[in-house]
Image 1 (cartoon, one colour):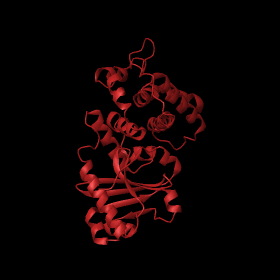
Image 2 (image 1 turned 180 degrees about the horizontal axis):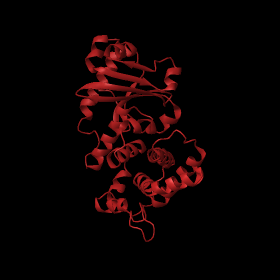
Image 3 (image 1 turned 135 degrees about the horizontal axis):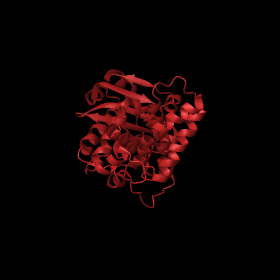
Image 4 (image 1 turned 45 degrees about the horizontal axis):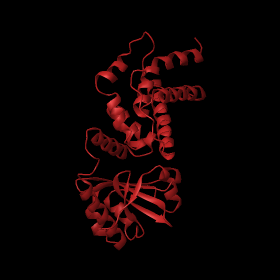
Length: 291
C-alpha cells in the first residue's frame, strides 16, 4: 500500500467522526460534507510526515474549515433556511453508525443544532469541540485564535446558552463594575487601584497589530500589567464584545482596538487586546454608556 492509499484508508476511517463534528458545528448535512471534502483536499496538500495523531489533526482541520464557514455566513448576514435533521450525518446506506445513533439518542440532534445557531462562531466551535468531543482547551485555543482561558470562557458562555440561561446576564453587572473600575484607574494612572482589580496572576496579551502600535505582546502578573496600563486607555469606552463586557477604542466610529476581559471572583484574570482588522470584523460589538 502506497502513501496515497494509506491516507485514503485512514481518512475513510475518520470520515464518520469528521462528518459528525462538522454537522454539529454547521447544522447542515450538505455543508458538513463540504467541510469534510475540504479537509480531504487539505490532507493531500499537507506534509503529514510528523503527524502522530491523524484523527486529531483532521478534527482540527475540519474545525477550522467550519469556523471559516460560520464566519462567512455571519459576515453575509446569512440565516440558514433551516437546519437539517440529523439522520444524514454519519450514516451510509446499509450501515449503522454508533456515533450517529448517539446524536439522535442523546438529544445532540436537531434541538441542539437550533440552539447552536444562536451562538457566535467562536463560541459554537469551542463548545462543540470541548463539550461534545472532549478536545482540550489548549488545542481549541489556536483554532479560535484565543488563549486557552479565553477559549474556556467561550465554551462556558455557549454552555449557559445551551442550558437555557442567557449568557453572562447574571454576572454582567458585577463584571461591568470591574471593567469600569479598571478603565477609571487606567485613565487616572492610579497604580494601586489597578492592582486592586487585577488578579495576582493576571495575563495581558496583545495581537501582532497592537504590538506594531507599540504595545508589549505579553505581560504577566498584577504589577507588570498595572504598569502597562497605568495612564492609558483614556479614549477607550465600555462595550459588549461578543456579549461580554469589554472596552473599545474607536476612531471616527471605527473600532481600532478591542479589550477583552476574563473576570473571576471579582478580579481580572486575563486581558486580550485585539486590533487585527479581520478579527475585529468578526466580533459582535455593542457600545455601552459609561456608568
